[in-house]
Length: 260
Image 1: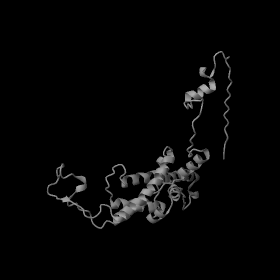
Image 2: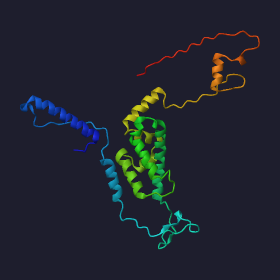
Image 3: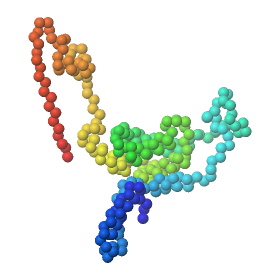
Image 4: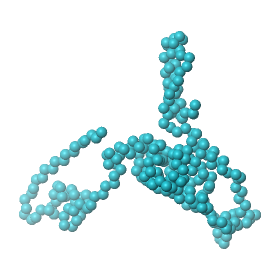
């Protein structure tokens, strides 16, 4: 039996307590020998991130031992060596291997999709509890976007790769081949609330970014809100000398339509 999340355990206890009250009042003869409960649990259990973490740690053959100071992080002419017993470390091999660079390219492509999802749903309550937001945070930390020091750790990359496969069943090669729309669809497939919210926003035009051209009020092509009001309600600049006053009646009609 798979382990239930907190919401699943709550639902199971609610059903068991309800049955206990009913059977206790009905009598001992009506108590069944066995009862099966079916629980609908939308939350993801802890097995997915735990299995990804275990797979990443299993790839570590031996612990890393630091035997010198990386010259990328210290200026030998102006900065004191914090540990005189250790020599400076001048690398001859590249800081980022081809394998790591390939993963970074794939994660960068995925980050572009997650940024797009955040832009569309970032202000929605469903986004803050979604797997898309969680994956966006993981990628932001692993790619060290805010720090931008170029220190990428292979165990973190391996853990993230396993997490993506365990949750979305997407390998690095599949993400590399897929287009942005396909990746976005795969990511949103695990967030039912975001899918429903996206359908609603598309029907109501919430995801459309509309832009309008300038509103020309007079010959000076002014576009401020004050000019629009003056054009509707009148202004002394629109009346010639000696011209009679004009009374305007403005009717505003608002109609609502319910769409299924």
